Amino acid sequence: MNIESSIDAEYTPSDDEPFMNERQKAYFRNKLIGWKESILNESRETLVAMQEDTTNLPDMTDRASAETDRALELRTRDRQRKLISKIDAALRRIEDGSYGYCEETGEPISLKRLDARPIATLSLEAQEKHERREKVHRDD
Image (tube, one colour):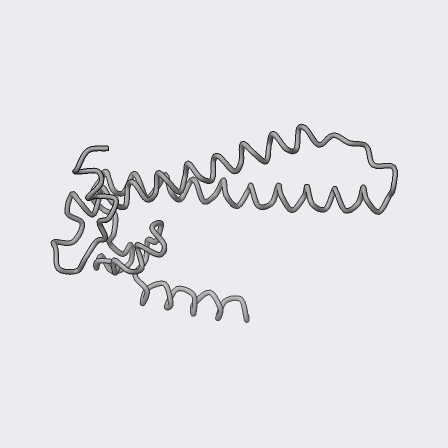
């Protein structure tokens, strides 16, 4: 490992530096790529486990339980597939220079929010407003 990558491993974006400078972009790009690789590895492991688990359970309760587990696993994988598409979109935003900026206001999204949720497209305020609007429409 070279010195530069070991320094970057300890790097945390800070408000004391220019927003979305090259170092911050590299930090978030690496974070997103690592997250995506982790999800893909889990998916591969699930696929292998599901292919290996072809046992025919004679007990109806055991079979129902196994089917429920499998359905839950497939739903989880579907959510993760959608998450991967959001990660890919965030990576494209890093490349086109729009990453880190709120889609509604154009203002920078806080670094703390991006660190916690690197796929965020809205600032905290815009997200809260969006969720309030959704709640009102759901209540109708």
